[in-house]
Image 1 (cartoon, one colour):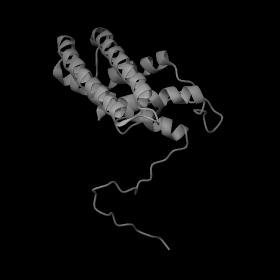
Image 2 (cartoon, one colour; image 1 turned 30 degrees about the vertical axis):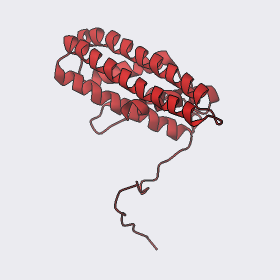
Image 3 (tube, helix red, strand yellow; image 1 turned 180 degrees about the horizontal axis):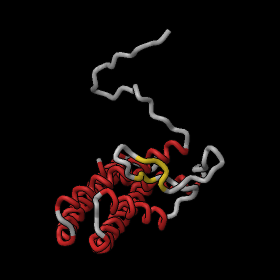
Image 4 (cartoon, rainbow, N blue to C red; image 1 turned 30 degrees about the horizontal axis):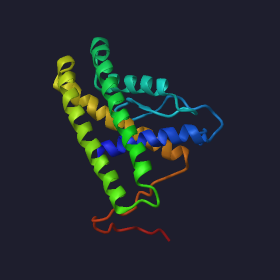
Length: 190
């Protein structure tokens, strides 16, 4: 599920920059670090155009601060992390290309099955890569900081997704019920 979420963020980031729909609402330029969370740590925010270099800079800054990495730890960790991310992007890119070719609107069950199997195979390859790179992370960071980096990655990606949704005018309703959850009582003010 986490891999799909990261893939979704990547697609949404590309879509925002291509369609130019990420304009500030109040005619003021948005800053790279706009809001603070409860722990007074900066949270990432999107600029008007997607820039991979700016994204990587903000991500490094956020991870370094959230995981309390020293400069030496960050310098050792990020080349390994970036290498892993590049390999994951390549795998996902291949799968997306296959999905487009094999699972079009006129796709047969056989083509759809091949596309589903390709996605499952990609997920397995990514899991193997993550396991392999976890060993490399352990060589440069203590386990406590690896865990903090993983948590920071989730927070960062969540904030990026939220910023993209807000820039497009999408708002999730707080009282939206999820399948399998009991009905929440609603209060009405008359």
